[in-house]
Amino acid sequence: MRYLNQKRKLDIVLSSLALFLLAPLLVLIAILIKLDSKGPVLFKQQRVGQDETLFWIYKFRTMRDDTPKDVPTHLFADPTKHITPIGSVLRKTSLDELPQLVNILKGDMALVGPRPALWNQTDLIEARRAEGVAPVKPGLTGWAQVKGRDELPIEVKAKFDGDYVRHMGHRLDLVCILLTVRNVLLRKGIIEGQVEPPTVPLKEKEMTHVAKK
Image (cartoon, rainbow, N blue to C red; front, side, top):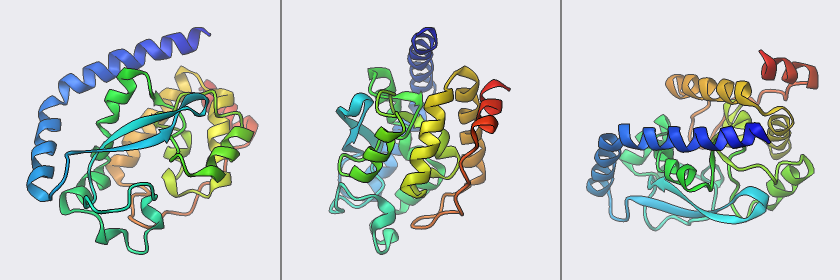
């Protein structure tokens, strides 16, 4: 598929360029993490990738080193007890996700696609499978991400991901990227342990309009 080939080439170029331009910021963040708390700079975790194969995802560590590793943050009774001071800033600005540019360069991920599920999120994995999401490479951001982030109900999130797969193309990818920038700047939906009311998935006609405009 021509789009997928072009998408991969764009992922390589854009992730390489971003890593080069953001190198000073990445080094600064690494230093701040080491000064802030004990533990490694990077957090590594197994996630579900394309065709439901597992891969190691990279993030800047934002939580104490003794925090349980394979539990989504919003499931903790009080997430703030586990998050470090610098980690709180990184999460609110989404800067903790920047190491995933390496995952994109390696081919584990794409810039845009369904966010990679934890290996033990079986309900989400099965819901996405029913929506035909499994063959698609996971992304740094995606349609479900810009419509409500990771705390959306599983069935709503899977529906958004399915909508993306059915209508994916360069225009929709650009819409996702622009909405991601807007959401990060406005801190839209970024509330530890909480979430804004989920947006209702678009109807087929509305989704087609977004993909084509």
